[in-house]
Length: 60
Image (cartoon, rainbow, N blue to C red; front, side, top):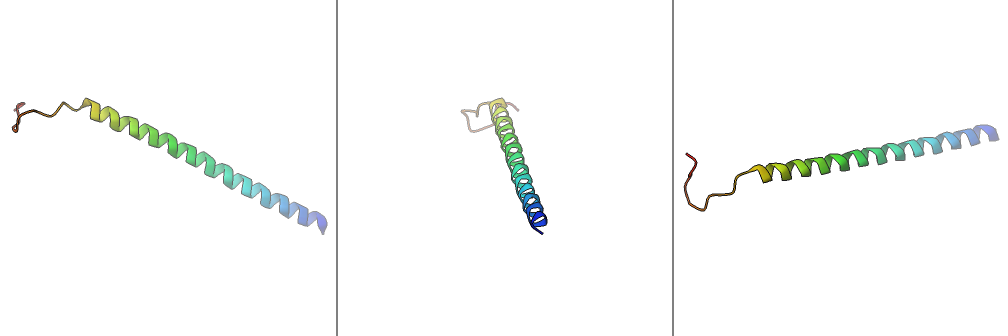
């Protein structure tokens, strides 16, 4: 009886650890994707030409 209670407790603890580990890995992955997206947005903004000082399209 005591062995089954200890085994159930260990199993529950392992599941909680696995869940916390999976959550931490997912959060790290999402943080990494967020920083990549921010870098991409900054690169795209840097690639845009400066706005014209005139009120009309000078590239046409």
